[in-house]
Length: 303
Picture 1 (cartoon, helix red, strand yellow):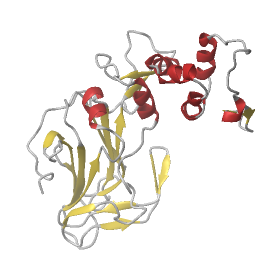
Picture 2 (tube, one colour; picture 1 turned 180 degrees about the vertical axis):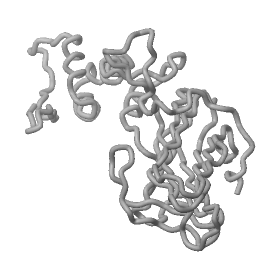
Picture 3 (cartoon, rainbow, N blue to C red; picture 1 turned 45 degrees about the horizontal axis):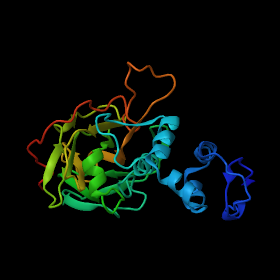
């Protein structure tokens, strides 16, 4: 067992010798405590292979439930405890953006152009500060409706049907958009949770956002959290875009960037939280909707 320069403990199979009858037994409670203080990947890849007793400890629900407790990771819905605590633990730790190329850094790769009106979609190369980070590029629309779309296959992203149906993790969407100060424009977004046949189960589609000419150019964030959507969700379809309202040739319409779709199985409980005050979901911003509306008639989603 060694230490890296960063101070992390690294365990290899050479650190453990096969047990023999002449060696005193280490109480399993002590072994359990040691395992809980090692990195989770080392526990699964190395420690689990040492002997049958260690394998049983690592495979037990109690081990991963205790890891979750110590790290303050709890299901967003306490009425649906995980069937597989190890899977729940790792899924909670691997939160990431499921949208490809959200900020136009790879042109339009990963996106399906649904509508390409006016002078078509384009890309703006002026960097900007959004949510405490620099975004180098953005997508920009023209004088007729421009829409683009991504379809997320949850199974391919590592979220099994059993996990989605049993756990029903919160699904957070976020999208940043802005207008030009000299041109009026409108912004559209539609996000659908789809079943195996790609039919909508739930739809989030707010009214279009309109900006008048000679408005300021602050970037706005659209957020929403899907909750309690029931079983059957296998795909997520994300569609957004817009146009300018002055019908000017060129690219004076709504600008969009830094879009995201995240699966959030857990909420973070800190020591400072009181039992009577529920903690926010790991992925949920303060501006996110507290409830998920039922299916609504789709307009841009059906295009």
